[in-house]
Image (cartoon, rainbow, N blue to C red):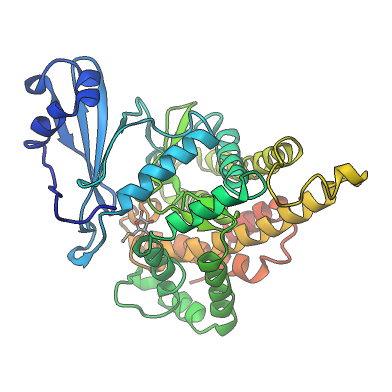
Length: 419
Ligand code: SR1
Ligand code: MG
């Protein structure tokens, strides 16, 4: 795994010389290095991202920095995260072909991945803020979550392969540590890196003074840190999805780890709910129509997840878990076992969803859905709905019956005033 000895962070000026030696990438770009146009476009929290445009094609080059870009070199971060991102992309491509960018080059010492430029797609979060609908989004995301959850688990994988993989990904220590603090811990006390919209103070005080809420969140953190059900993307929000008006892809799995199966879909639903609650500040006459569409994406994603997971259960259950030898071969249906497992995944997803809704409003890394609302008097009441529904989800994750109940809860909170 990468350390800093042979590492050089590239710039738009130095990258052409490096890429001209990377034959496969250079051939894809076409022409020679003087013909390539390079822009550094990284606007995420961690990495350098270059768009390299050649006469024949365009390639993305992503390079890890040895620190958190959002904060600066006061927060060092290991380069080895590129190694885990590369391995995650390979596995996701096998488990859901076509869903993630194709990798052309992985340079471990330089913590650099050259990959497919996904065009003309744009970051989904921006489309949601701009009120642009995306067809086929729910089926795509539901299948991605179900296929990666199922095919990365011992419902499908050979136990020895899965255990070797768990051991390998366990080397990714600092990246999950970010999630452990920023997502599961910092929102619930006055942590140094936190910030929130000042008008939210009373709601924030209410959440932080609730030991039952904190205990439930910590219980979920314990599962996140110790339950290796499957390989998760680890940061599946609307900024990790790129879409046109009808096609979508998933990017950026550097937060990959083995974790509960409900993690990715829970985080995803949270980000759609935040898009939903922020809409009154972004829309005009089309508000109701667009919010209804977002809710339909949430419900559709979960419905597809259940359908696809059940289909894989019936057709690809080749691992050591719930073996056919114990069920079908004995003349016993495994349908109820599948439903019960989906019930557990649902409960985890609901808890994760509530926690993610909190952290994007209270911890370090907020999202543009709310942050782009400049007038805090407009932003705060919308964020308050989001925070209060997050708490309700965490507290009811074991009893909330289904997605219909979650969607009605969102409609209800969308009308309430908490400040
Ligand atoms: C310090 S990194 C902050 C956040 O950015 C990433 O995209 C993850 O969501 C992480 O929690
Ligand atoms: Mg990211």
